[in-house]
Image (cartoon, rainbow, N blue to C red; front, side, top):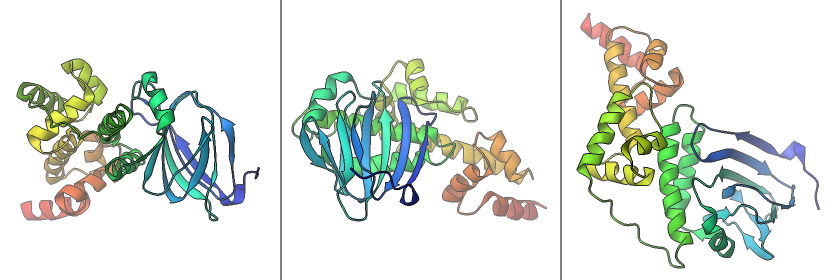
Amino acid sequence: MPSPATSRATVSAWRPRVPGVVEVFHARFTEYAYPMHVHDAWTLLIVDDGAVRYDLDRHEHGTPHDTVSLLPPHVPHNGAPATAGGFRKRVLYLDTSRLGDDLIGAAVDRPDLRDPLLRRRVAQVHAALVRPGDELEAESRLTLVGERLREHLRSREAATPASPLRDPVLVCRLRELLDARVVEGLTLEEAGAVLSAHPAHLVRAFSGAYGIAPHQYLMSRRVGRARRLLLEGRSPSGVAVATGFYDQAHLTRHFRRLVGVTPGRYRARGVTAGA
């Protein structure tokens, strides 16, 4: 068994402020092979470069680029590079609030899922998790990932996702809740507890009614509030704090996406025009 090649390995790991996520793990390995081991959490794995070969429940599996691998808790598995250049992977470790123990058997039978939409959604979760302040987006996207994983695990055939149920009273209440918490923000778990609704239903119902996900609505409200404060002459750093963004970089990223210019340029042109 090869030993870890530390000079050719890069690793980053952290625990985000997203309910149900125990750990985020990004790594690049060229020679390291994992021995047999177990986790007490679900392992949701995508490989961005190369491939991994692993054994689960005495059966060999692999992770080509278009595959999402879901390894259940408490079941031994190993892992090794399947290509000469090693592999680069991104992993989410999820607790049982996201996937229950009742799905372990199905995951042992079908750990590798070829589903382009699921693969893209998992990558979107990771993209949100590396951006401080975008925890609601990560939670929203992860909720849809969990829903699709359960569809795979509960049927041998990939089920067609059901159309979102129309629930105008619920989506109106969620919008009012988001409006009241523009600066403070909230998690889908908190919203679900307040509104007595499952987070996945909240995301689908809200998106179906308004055409955008709850996290997109919240960010657009924050940007709208930031625009007004910038035109009053306040600094971008002060506006970021006042409107609920993690920091100025977080504000700049979303502001540029929605307005087309940075907060600094917007403020300078607006103040000049106003003067």
